[in-house]
Length: 323
Length: 286
Image 1: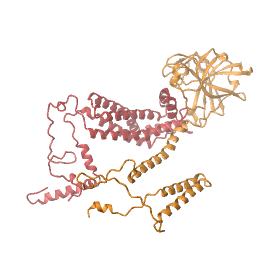
Image 2: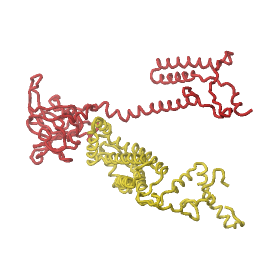
Image 3: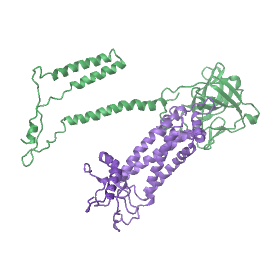
């Protein structure tokens, strides 16, 4: 008896069955349910496990119970070699057939992919999402309105987020414009010009072009508010200049020279119990006029170097979430 | 070795000693094939007219290893925290850098090696790239290795960018502000990339820890993987001759392989020589 014939006479193996897979899924759902929702998901998982377990046990014990086992004959098209002898290697199976090794290959790759995905997705989310979600708006209390005499400029430095500390200290140029009639309610409301010092070229700190407190002979005012120490340095600016790449702005923040692409950003503000309170920043393409009568072309807060108007704005169609 | 006459006592002793000394390597080789692998790597054939310029890649690799080792040591003393030290009012990260530079024994040296070595690494990569370009060594079948090399260069520059923030002084802070905003002006996804790099809307403590993690874990891991691939392709594809090579042009026959008298770890085994202990076939060791 040659080895080929021996191979032909092996016992018929039991048919591969899907019941254990269903049983395993049921157990998995049961365990997940214990974590998520013991009442419902675990019940469903338990039911799946019991049903498939029963079917599995029924099939596994079929022989013992004397039921006829239906075994489909294995079909393999054997191609005869030219000499009429059977080839040692079994003939290639048609591609449509899922052989055991093919199934195992797919299962290994598929399971590997699923496990990899289960690990990667939350980890990547943890790395990326916190920078985008839940960005909090911080209100900055700058002190009572009486600290800002009408028409005078100050370089104000303040901590935006006391939890972050000094690293969140920002600078703004502030001028009290007096009051202006609200266009909607016609009521008289305070007007402030509050310009962020972040250069809209690449974010360096712009400086006021002009004498500050020490030269003017006016003291720097320090005020303790709930945001920590706020410093107000009197200044008489002729405009603003950036030390990094030479961008120049006029007194309202309009670009007059250098690489910046728009006017300086501004802070929104509100008067809270008679105290000047800064809100988020917004971006400005340009400003017409000055002081209380200025017309500000306001846009959503955008990063430095991003155009707000003209055809270049099409390069920045979608801004990440801001506070 | 086959002896015609009976070996003298001295010869026998010497043979025993050699076996004893090479035993650990034999043990390793039999179980892993690693010794053979190292020998294959070190003694593979290269063109006879290779040039000193062709050591620039190894020099860049050495510079990277210096960065890796000094970086590991610096990480033992550095604290990536933007918080303010209540005792001094200074940022903790900056203070730990001052501590490394001024107080830790030899800290100034290791930090200096890491700091200047960073520039050396980048410069050597560029010189290596120039050599490959001028020698035409990027051509078929080595295009893929050029691409991998470019990726290593990009990763090296990302190391420079992320490492620059870690001293957490004014230069570091504002250079990173400008660098991130430069990325932010890229069309379409730029603003998103910038916010990802900052870990939020503004540079803060999250940016520092994020850059630290990228600088010491993520990017070095990628560089090591890419260098492994790069070296694999160098070994697989072989070293190119210089463009002026007469041998490569078929004008001169290749020189005979040098034959040394005594094979060892530092010299190639002559062809047809008797098997040295290093070359023992699996199971053939007596």
